[in-house]
Image (cartoon, rainbow, N blue to C red; front, side, top):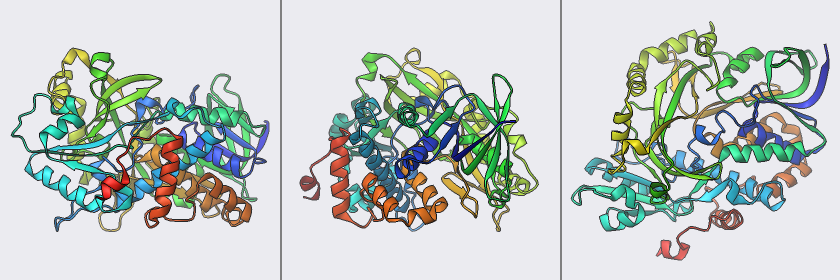
Length: 503
C-alpha cells in the first residue's frame, strides 16, 4: 500500500479548510499541503451559495446575537465578538485581492444594506434598546434606527408595501453590510492554492480510518470513491474541516478531547424567487425575530442575494428535522454517531428539547401555501407561483456533557484540538463561514504555538491581518483605519458619514 507524506492534511474542501490552507501557505510556502474531499466538487456542502445565508454575519441585523436579559437590558457581547471577527475576514480577503490571489471583489462580495425589522410593541421596545446598546460602540456607530413608516418605506419598500400605517414597527440598518457567495470564494481560494507546487487536491476521496503513531504523526487511510483503491496519508497535522461530517471523523481520531461530543442535525429550506421584476424591488437583507422555540438558524430573513452571478431573493430558512449530517450524507449519520461516551448527553438533550423537536417536525410538514403565508409577514404581495422551494444546507449543532443536566445543546461553533496540537476540527454552525479567518487563526495559534512565536510568522500575520494581536473592540482608531481600507478595496463604500453619525 502506497504512503504519501505531507505536512498538512485538510479534510473537506469547504471554506474553513481553504482558508486554513491559504493562511498556512502564506506563512510557510514550503509546507506540503494535501486537501481531501469526499465529493466530486469543491464547496458543495455548507460553503455552497444556496447552503448558507451568505449574509457576511457581522451582528448588524441578526437579533439572536443580542438576547434580552431578565432585567430588561440587552446583552451585546456576542454581537461585538462576531463583528470584530468578521472584520478579520474582510482584512484577509482585502490582502488576497491586493496580492492578486482573489479575483475582483464583486465576483464574491457585494455591498448590501443589513436591516432588522420588527412588529408589535414588545419587539419594537426590544429593537430600540438593542440600537441604544449597540450604537454607542464604535463597531456599530454607523447603525441607523427608525420607527417612522415613511422612513421605512424608503429603507425597505417591498416589506412596507400594504402595511397598516398604524402598526407599530421599527427597523435598524447598516449601509456597509455585505452579501457573500462563499461557494465562489472557496473555489477561488482553492484555485489559488492549486497554483502552488506544494499543494495537492484529491476529490472523490473518503477517509476510512485514522490512527496516530508513536512519533505523533497521523496515518490516515483514504479510499478513492471511483476505484475503491486505498492509500495512506502520513500527516504531521490534520484539520477536519468537513462541516457536518467533522464529528464522525473526530470520533474516528480517538483523541480524548473528542469524548462526550454529540451532534443534533438540522436541515433547512428556502423560498427562492428568480423573477427579475420582483428581485430588483428588494436590494437589502431584512432579518426578523425567530419564532419561540426555533433554532437560531431559523431566524426569518428576506435576502437580496447574488449566487453564481444571478440576483435572487431568498426567504427563510424553514428548519426541518433530519438524521443526516450532510446534504449528501446518510440517514444513518445520527445513529452512527452514538457512542457510549456521548449517549447520556444525547439522551438528555433529546429529553430537554422536545419543544424544539416538535417545532422542527411541524416545519417539515408545512405546505407551500403555509410557507408563503409566513413570507407575507415580510412581503404582503407575495404570490405562491413566484416562489419555489430550494434545499438549504445541513447543520449539526453541538451536544456536549453538562454536570447539571447531563447534556446541553449549543448553537455556536467550537474549535476542538488535540493536546499535542497535531489535530484540530471545527464543530457547530453559526456564524460559520463569515468568521472563518478568525477561527482558522485560532487553530494556527493552538497547533503551531512555537512557530507563531517567531518574528517571521508574526510579521507575516500582521501583513495579512493589520489588526492582528490588537483588539478592534477596544481600539477605535485601528477599527476606523482597517475598516476604511477594507471597504475601499472590496468596494463596500455604502455607509453613512462618520461625522453625521456622531452628530
